Length: 63
Image (cartoon, rainbow, N blue to C red; front, side):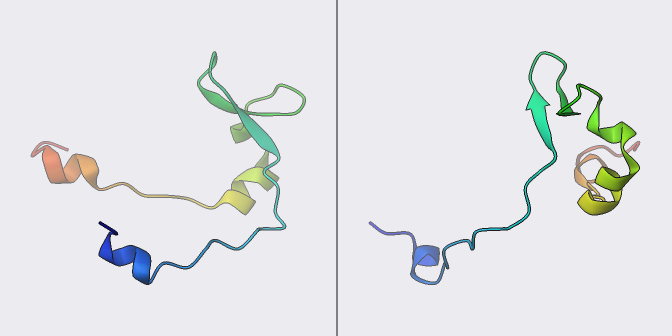
């Protein structure tokens, strides 16, 4: 059985943007090629933007 949404899903386009960081599972952080945490680079922060989560407020009354 084919899920209904696959009838309308489009393949993702290849992005020309390459992430300047990789995930380090030992540190559980995104790190730059020189080993610094990605969060220390303002250019990466500006390019990545921000995200917001409402999961806590949806599941906990005291958030």
